[in-house]
Image (cartoon, rainbow, N blue to C red):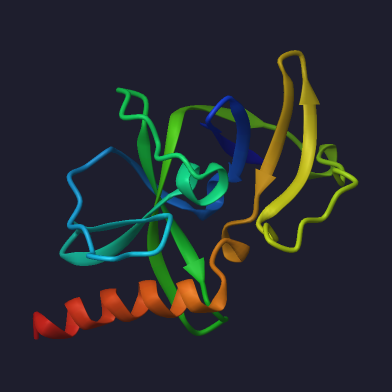
Length: 158
């Protein structure tokens, strides 16, 4: 299976490439006043408003550094089997891919209730890579907030 690799601060993470629609450079975002931590704003992708989340801010509390290699991973976020949305995930050093068997990832031995999106880990010659579970990234209140904003923006264009 193919995975997109990226960094959140000094740590390496992977995301299933099948979830990724496109990887784009860091774009100028429309900011939402008084947004909760991690909600970076919104951008237009192929005529649709897409919420952007700063993965670094969500996980480490620090905003992503604006490097040439900082990217937005546009991913399919499945709220349920019939409701899917696009979200943009801002990640640092999102320039590599990895081909591995999903069975190579093993449970980390720690489950954090506050971070259900952190999945199993894989070791390579450079250290640990942790799988990010995109569909567990948003808690209910954040999911409601993010998708309400984009739905309102879509309806305003009608």
